[in-house]
Length: 301
Image 1 (cartoon, rainbow, N blue to C red):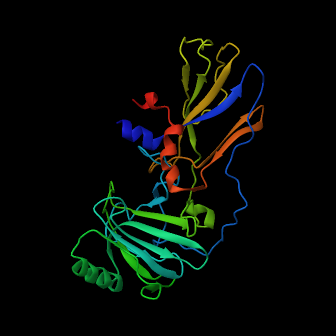
Image 2: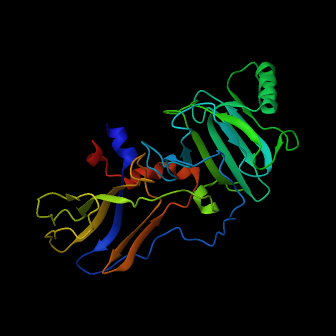
Image 3: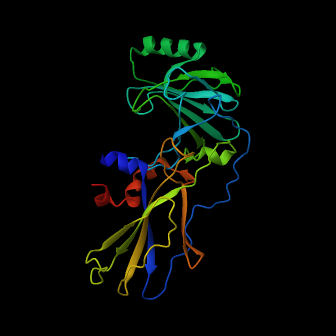
């Protein structure tokens, strides 16, 4: 139960609201000068794309580093295609993590990743089988030479599955910076996705950071639940002067039903002016555990 709530909701603390002095922090966001190439990548699945997981989703102990693509409502063996020209640079076969996975390096400086596969195309499968016998091991991490397994955009490379640490049949899809190995939100590359539902704020929370100044409830935290579709103009909360922070819990859908997902970007405004902003645009993997800075754990217990 705890695991499910954490995955489906984000609790983000907007720190630094100084009620007594009216101070505020600098606008904080990962806005950068990165110019991501548009329309060079295609979706690795054919047909209408539906997600069961978004980039930056909060998982039990890490941020989600890619997109989880539904495979015909949970079917295995769906054809997976190369998102752009390149070459197979890495092949993993494991009972953990991404299970059977492929990595393709592209000449534009990015790497695409395909995880939880059930199998590979004939050429890749033959190479992997040879390595299984040669190394006498089920667990493999192979790095073929650049000229061994070239691919073109739209080539069949594998079949979707449920291998490794997967909770159900789907395709895990990532785009990384080849040089830094940072995971980047694939939707920044111009990939089209049907999204007709707005995110929903489920609750707002006020935190008192000065133990001598309690909220009217007598505790350091007061949580206000909102009705579906409600605006953030909730009833006022009486407080004494002191240092406070605001939190929010939310979820998002692509359409009316379907899977609930997190939000990679959020902004807090004060008197209709931007006050704090957080963007999950690109992520070094050694920042995975920063997810714990975004959660108020007692709320989920």
